[in-house]
Image: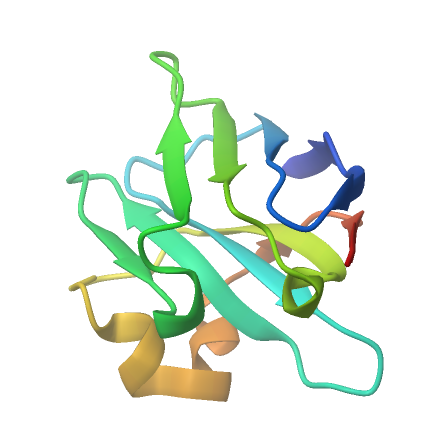
Length: 133
């Protein structure tokens, strides 16, 4: 059974940094796509960053140049390094995994918009990130 568990959320002042981690267990599929999503109160869940098993990445326009998605050598831990945080980044952040994500490009998150989350099969419980001004 695939399980995803986020950690590393918390509170930080504007301009600060946080790193989220997502531990992945039970993954037996040969191909994969991993991503971070976030959902602020009263807003739709949105894609933040994604990577696939070829190492390609995609970022939402709002986080480009500030957030970096990566994984460890075992590919069983996903990270999201978040720098220069602003209050607009306040949200619950979710880790997600997909065995069917294909053709990831730099603009995938922007092109698919709310439909991007439909590509993912497994989700973590979320980690709260709060940025104060």
